[in-house]
Amino acid sequence: MPLITTETGKKMHVLEDGRKLITVIPGDGVGPECVEATLKVLEAAKAPLAYEVREAGASVFKKGIASGVPQETVESIGKTRVALKGPLETPVGYGEKSANVTLRKLFETYANVRPVREFPNVPTPYAGRGIDLVVVRENVEDLYAGIEHMQTPGVAQTLKLISWKGSEKIARFAFELVRAEGRKRVHCATKSNIMKLSEGTLKRAFEKVAQDYPGIEAHHIIVDNAAHQLVKRPEQFEVIVTTNMNGDILSDLTSGLIGGLGFAPSANIGDEVAIFEAVHGSAPKYAGQNVINPTAVLLSAVMMLRYLEEFATADLIENALLYTLEEGRVLTGDVVGYDRGAKTTEYTEAIIQNLGKIPKRARVREHKPFRLPKVDGAIAAVVPKSRRVVGVDVFVETDLLPEPLGKALEALAEGTPFRLKMVSNRGTQVYPPTGGLTGLVDHYRCRFLYRGEGEAGDEEILDLVRRVASRFRWMHLEKLQEFDGEPGFTKAQGED
Ligand code: NAP
Image (cartoon, rainbow, N blue to C red; front, side, top):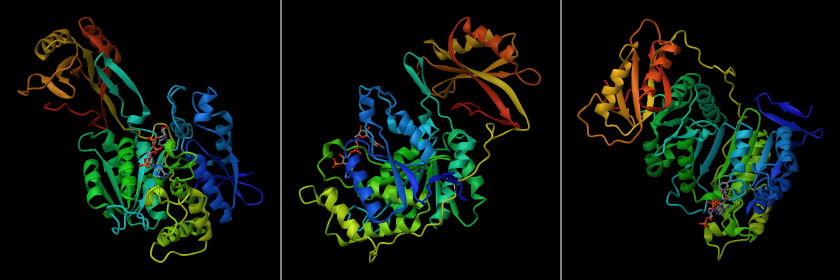
């Protein structure tokens, strides 16, 4: 069978002659030039690879395929399990779905890995500080699940879903990356001081997983401080693991630390499939001019070779790249200015000529095979010993002030097993009054606690909602639950 699972858990397609089959997507704009340069270097380095070239992006949207990813491409990746792709445009007016996001989601590539390092002769304000770090971004959960609702005509909601399973997986992924790359330290960056339950889930999973890796220093850092520290002293970081939106922002920041998008590779890795691509987009203004820096795609291919456990070829190419940059004779326009920069093809040729050479100062990190983390695959990953429904939050739309609203709700709850605990507006208690001077919108959360024996039953909750609905327009309900005696909900600002 050509599809194998390595001892480290990775799936790959190995041909009879030992070459590994990968899907190549040239992409849009500067994509084909960057991918062509990369394939030339891979060929010159005798990388033991075979390719299936497939389409995605603008050309596909133009054919009227709204996802931007045709079935042949999906099937090819399903077969090869590994893809190298150029950037894909998201043209406006052809369905407006991102083909990149489609690919990441279709194949559940839950880890987005973005390494950045200082390169010789690439000027940055941080030159000489030895930046060499990786951002590991959770790639499928969080606000990017895209579950959004207008709850009132003027108030929008996005659900931020963070699972224990997803958090444990990405945390283990980060520790495994530290191990594979011979690093010492990992930081987990979250906003768990504010979002104690959602962001806090990653923090708690990270702290639990850290116990399995006693040789690795594990630190938690609040994400805003991580941004500050990354600008002030980026060299203190080795691996940063973080939730989807934090990672989106932090990893663009880190690309900016090392000389720009021409040098920022990435990988999207899941249990079944891995997709390697530059961080940058299709840079349309440079398309077809033979001036673009192909390094980011080339380094993505180097990451792919290490994923495929082709370490010698990966080191050969990375050394040739570092040697070329260290030599500083042939550099692209983004580094030395487009009036003086080398053509993409000249730069590629220089790297090829330098295959086999070792740079004087810049070092290639030693890599061990990366082990894909295994976590319990059960759908219900956390099973509490006990659970209890202790109340309900009913969200209503009204332009009443808090005092009359609170009094009306108290009257409606009379004779039910619930009492109104408080009413909040955008998370701050406004009834009973706290003495604060909170601004108001037409979106209130009304918290009712259960006073009866045992737990609140669905019929009791629905009866309460019917009573509330007799006077107010409700749009959302949230049961208040306790798991193993711990509240599964947070308090409002100002709530006792
Ligand atoms: P972009 O294509 O990344 O280009 C922004 C700027 O970054 C360029 O103008 C250029 O800066 C610099 N740059 C990008 N790649 C470079 C390289 N290889 N070498 C040197 N400099 C490079 O971002 P965009 O213009 O916002 O997006 C264009 C299209 O790409 C959009 O359709 C977007 O949706 C898509 N996109 C795709 C991906 C992906 O496929 N993963 C990612 C991002 C964006 P200067 O102008 O300063 O020279």
